[in-house]
Length: 202
Image (cartoon, rainbow, N blue to C red):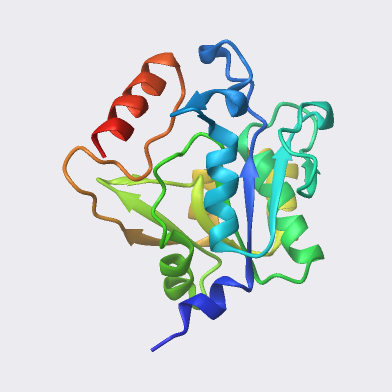
């Protein structure tokens, strides 16, 4: 049996905070859920999974935490793939074999996410959880290979799912309890209110 806790320590986690959050009126990481900011919830979750956690965003002045390593995304409004590039480069620089990239707006991620993904990674370039048929590329574990991604971006590639297909990322089926999507993301005020109700019920 593989020691998933040991392998998890070889992985780092990067929290993507580069989105503008227009549908929430901006400042998404600072929005509170149950009296705690979305970012703080994610950083606490990440800190319990790995000994190395960093933040990816577009503007250093908007960092929600000055104590964590700060990664500045590529310019050009590339979207989430810029955060993935930052994450892969950071992981390689820190000598980590893989990196888990997550969004700052995923307050219900499973506590065993990194461990299970590490168990499945093997020799694959990445492993992506799939819940109800939907690949969760912003909750995936990626091997630290920024050079391949840089070539993809130079060729005009922008979609993470296309990159995942190109490198042959493994898919991991992830079941959920009724009404409890572990990959639920808070994208607007309506989903924030839904998350509040779910938190009260749990």
